[in-house]
Length: 345
Image (cartoon, rainbow, N blue to C red; front, side, top):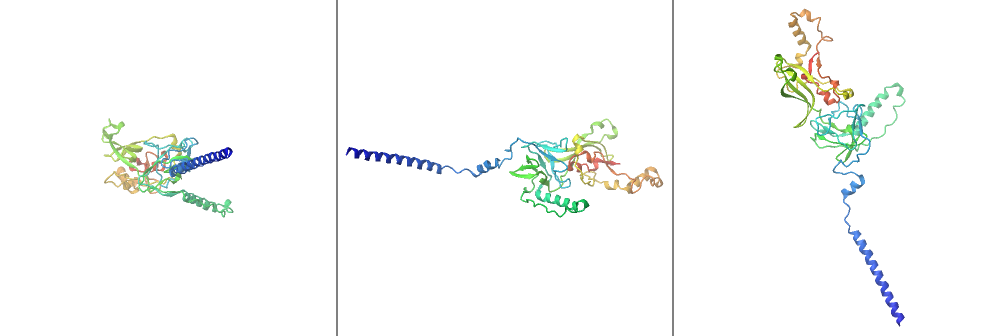
């Protein structure tokens, strides 16, 4: 009888222990089940190791982005933006090898006068490849190779940007790739809708080197460059101009060692009045006809003019004072085509 009571007690005790264990397991599982679900944004951050709202969370260790100003930029006639050091009035200059060197994780400031344009790197690559393909077809040495098939391009990498976006700051990711608003783009995808517009502004200052010269008492300084914002002007040159004589006395600009890497194949523009020279037809003043007429008056006879001017090789052209090739980027070179920067040559 005593033995039977012990068995009953042991059975009850073991049953209680089992109940406690089951309760404990269920409690742990329940706690696991009611844990909050990981936020989707946190999952994206963890998987991509990137902050989707802030491109600054890029690993800064690693080689810089190296961009050849001749090969890795939009073509000079593809409406390039301004390439600026962030929050400064300075262009980002190439190194001794003609490359823009941007540290990994650093940003470069790009600016358009009107707006950036949507573009696709794949379309650019395909256009370049078609050009090379056609070039190879015309080459006798490559006549047997032009039938090779071209690899398909991924056209999903489309640079989409809100209308009237004038300034962006893409961040160096690696090689030629940059991060902007959480998406990766090739550097040459950043182009403007319209050509970047330069301005000529009167400074209302006397020319420093001309203050004691009575003949140039009315000469004043002007500056040429780009308005990035109300308090930022990216300058390309300064000009001492004499309005009474309709002539520029001198031009100031900085010639840098990096200027040797100036972008090639930038088309020449027509010279612009840039909002000045009101009441004067500058193109007429530089015309061959007007040159011959003025020479005839100065030399008191048309017979002398025939030996000095013709319409083919002997005439006065619009000569640059600050040379186009002194400037690196296409936007800078275009700013030289204004009548302030011209003289008969």
